[in-house]
Picture 1: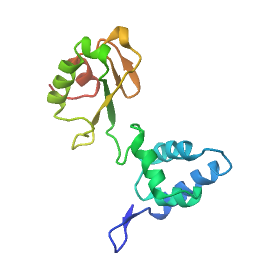
Picture 2: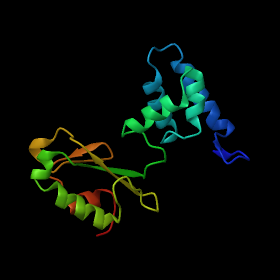
Picture 3: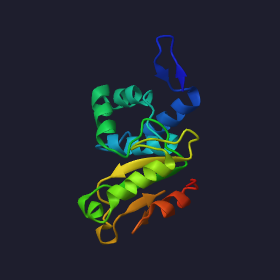
Picture 4: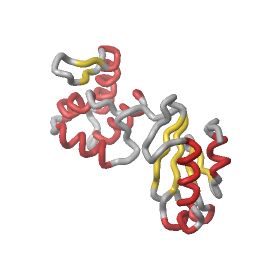
Length: 163
């Protein structure tokens, strides 16, 4: 990504080529915005702000509409996530099983708040609202793998963090 003289982010030519390929691959698809955004995030690790006007122009929709979709769905990121992503369930069943205590411990051990990524890029901590592991609460998802009866020690060890 580069900056224009006006201070706006733009995609560099290789990134723009990737984005154009994604758009071309979805051009004939009805309702293609979500699949495009997923493909962009898959390619870049996040949805760069500079991609939004390009996507909007290609789909003939407003930038505000694209931005609204990106910000509505919690799985889309505007910056790259850490090498490891820990998602802690915040739903009621997990709360009844100690999720609040677990969250506080994990946050303290990793030195992160919700949505934060460690300065070294090692881990991102996100809240989620129900992983469907209600019988095994408190639950987490670490790099896409479900973890039932999660403990702070176990989660921190899974991402290589220190205690």
